Image 1 (tube, rainbow, N blue to C red):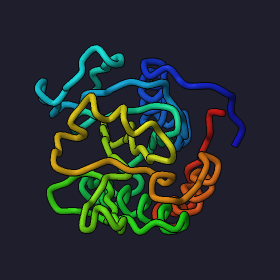
Image 2 (cartoon, rainbow, N blue to C red):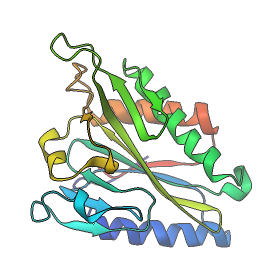
Image 3 (cartoon, rainbow, N blue to C red):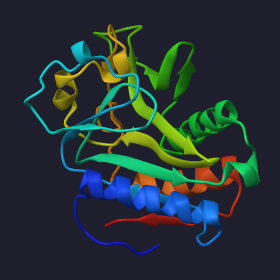
Length: 217
């Protein structure tokens, strides 16, 4: 799993994903899970509402074909783009999203954090145990996918140590009334490398071995 250093331009990432998805469909490339890190930016999914972009001039905004609403990507956040062949695995988009949730929950467990699903709220959530905010639930990971001819692309974003204030420019995933957190914010001083180890192990547990996982370092 070799890679190169630096932050990956978002438009280039989309172009690479689309080309890889086409090649997987054509049978000329293997599945791939691509671990990347982006410069600060907002992305708008197919369900994004204009009123949820609170600070349109703060960072570049990229309209994208993935499902979901607005989200933030930036340094300290591990983005995993999964290009998988669902026709070979299981042609069921809902089951695939459920598997992505299970993948994140299993990875977080390896990092000492208990992540949970919430009905009606996309992504993975944690219950805060801080003395000054009992009962609060914060989002630690986002999910946004696209499936074309049963090949997936886009994927997940796990907050390791991003600047959480940057989420203030949007209503993350269209969900208000809840916060956003990270591993470090929760008191778990993990690095991107730590998250990668956990994601690799958890992926094999949930999806089975088969798809190579490449990191852009």
